[in-house]
Structure formats: structure tokens, C-alpha cells
Image 1 (tube, rainbow, N blue to C red):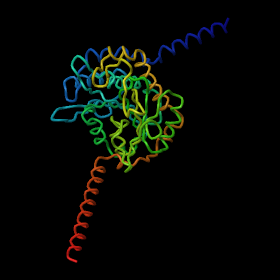
Image 2: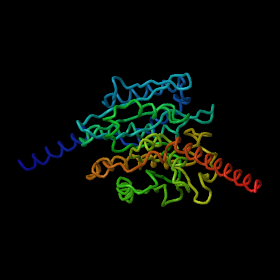
Image 3: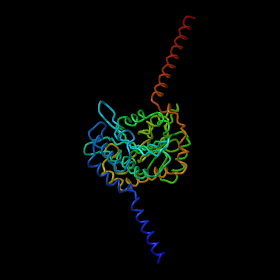
Image 4: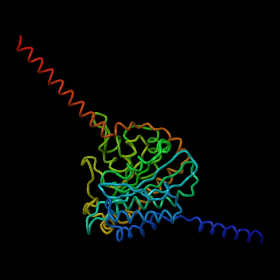
Length: 360
């Protein structure tokens, strides 16, 4: 009898435990909230009233999920094109010297009655919010910053402002930036870290073998390594991860799409009116991709979560091997100036030689 009672008590304890600690699933949370974005937060262009309203929505969600602000408050305001934009920054303090940042931009390219930025980038924002509830109580040996950037679509302004506002001791101890941008609408999922071999990249590549996500970079489909070894203009760098890579910070970005090795870019799913910045609304996305849109978000969510709780994560992220000068625009300008100087010197030398021959 005692054994029966003990067994029943154990079952009840397990059920209570599951009820208390059950996490919201990515599918249920995102399906509900993506409809909210499609109806309420349509125009989130940089500096707009809608962008500001969306920032307040994100702040309320962070408060609801018991995520503290990183600065004195959640909202980090900055000026862009004589208008006010803002980042929303949450923080999980695990009393560590190290930081991992998970970021997603929330502004969009708005086309009235057609494109509301559901894939680009409500998909990344909602997945990032979902990860806050999963990682908040994970007791990791590094701190987590949850960043939601404004003004990405007009030149990565939010992420650049955020990085320039950080103290050096924090900047130097960011072991990885994870970027979530347009991660739903595509037949395939892709990740990108850096073209050159790195310790952190090798670790991510080995980890990715357990997931159906394709690596983008030197080994697969595309490379941003030109004849000069300059890494700047690349499909894997068309988001806020570029701001971090240009500072030499380890970075990992995810996005969904259909890439063609021969077409050098996106190709369309059959029957698709191009979603990116044209018909980026939930009706078109669900018609073309259906449940795939949400399963892509869930797959990225699971990849990031499992990567961050993996045993050797920190030790493999500590070393920085990226040369930020290879990603900087001023380096490209310097190359151009040097080429012009060389051409001028060659022209001058030829002129002197021609003049000498005439005198002879």
C-alpha cells in the first residue's frame, strides 16, 4: 500500500513539475504573435511611429518574460536621418566575464497593402523572444544579451550604434554574436559565420551536422573572398552580423531562402510572387510555404538553444581569429587609392621615358 501511495505521489510530482516548467513552444508562440505583427505592426520603417510602437511591444514582452534591461532601461534611442530610432536590449546576468548576444532587427521595408516584414524580420524577432524564455533560467557560464535592432534596413544603423556604445571590457569579451534574419520563408535554411577557417567556425560546422541547415561560405555555393582577399559584399553579410564581423567579433547568422549555385542569388519557389520586400505578408507566406515557415523558425530556435547549452561551447568561442580590416569599407577605399597612385606613377614614368627619348 505504501509503495502504491509513493508511486502515485511521484507521478503527481512529475506532472506538477512539468506544468510549472513547461516552456512555450516556438510554433504556438510564433503563430499567435506573427498574426499580431501582420495586423498591428505593419509599417516598421526606420524612424517611424510604427517602429517605435514595435519597440514598446518588444519591451513589454521582455518584461513579461522576466528579462532585465541591459542599460538603465530597455530602450536605447539614437538619431538616424534626422529621425529617432531605437534598439531594445534585454539582459540575463549570469555573473560571468563573457557575453553572447542574440540579435534580430525589427524594422522593415514596408509596401502598403502588400509587404509587412513578416519574414524580414518578424520571424527573427519572435524566435529571439522565444529564446529568452528558454535561456533565461539555463544557468549558463556566460551572460546573454538579447538585442532587437532598429534601422537595419537603411544600413545596419542600430547594431553599429549599439556596438559603439559598449564599454571596451564588454566589447572585448563578446564570444559570439548570433543573428536571426528572415529565417522562415524559404525551402532551405542557411547559416554563415566566416569564409576563412576558425576554431569557432569548425565547432559550429561539426555541431550543424545534426541539423538540416546548409553552410554558406567558401565551401558551399558562395564565397565573398575576392582576388584581393577582401571580404565585404556578400549575401551572408547583408545583416547586422556584418557590424560585429567588422569589429573582429565571432558571428553566426541564420536565414531561409532558395539559393542557386548557378544563378548567383535567390531563385523563386514555383508560383511565388517574390516575398522579400515585395509581398512579405502572412497570407502569401502561408500560401507558398505553409507550415514550413514555422518549422524553419523552430529549427533555428532548436539549433541556437542546443548550441548555447553544449558542453564545450565557451572554450571553442573564446579565440578571435577574424581580421576586421578585411571587412572594412575604408580598406577597400585604401586599395582604390593605392591603385590610383600606382597608375599615376606608371603614367609619370612613361612620360619621363618618352621625353628622354625625344631629347636623344
